[in-house]
Image 1 (cartoon, rainbow, N blue to C red):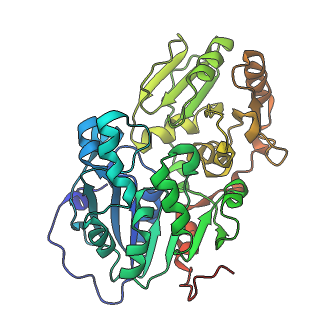
Image 2: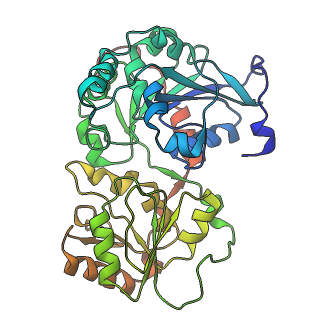
Length: 391
């Protein structure tokens, strides 16, 4: 982000004739780790839209217990829009509690207040951020709990961009119920995966591939790796991380080096496994671009297969021409550049890496990857439905 974008200013009315999109995300706009909604935000700005970037699931509990956003991000605009660039406003919907799934005892009872779809005035405040917008995009987060209030406040098309399967990533009862209710309110459910589309059968589903900031990867970046001559395996991310498989892989391939980007709560203690922590995206580009093999050690949970199409790290690997080692459920015949392993089976893990190393990198389908501008353009064409009945 530029110095200009960091300068906080008053919030004047937007320029006449400019369209505006409100994006509801789990993420803070200003955070080190960049998610899909960040890149979508920048794509809309590049297309000449004004953007309101709204953070959800941020409460007193968040501040109390801390999470990656509080460690690596800056929250501003608590329950109000704050302009940080001529075409960008941000806000954080700050509540006493938010919907969580695993709290116990007194904390669980207090957090249970959030399971009543936020009985505080915050629903109205959250909805106000969509007022006057020409398009609303909600990702898989607490914004779903405000869907009816947003619909009442805005006649703009509302898109549920199902960035994750919350039944797998965040199995919070209140959030899962809110998702079901939102399906009858939104104008489109945008998914990139046929696996995830099955979950929304009967809803207004549309297929929109995930985007990638291809321009960043097209730049000539120097290699960050030491010139050892050893095979370099990159793990671009830490979400849903299978520590046991990562450890088994490093142990099975002692002559290869593994480089993992993103914070891990539990370290992987192998001499050839290097944890790089949170890094700027420009650093990520270098590590992925100059790797030999991509590795995606996802936890194998029921319903996780959608990540084969939704995973940003796998898109990075594909665009950089990296054969990828993935859980076997992701390695289908349609993806010959994905090499599957059975979790907990060191022999199959080693075989997957050996097969990936022998694969012709020119056969990795780089041309299948779209950029975020194309995704933003596709979403900007969604129109308002005039009936609650699904077609």
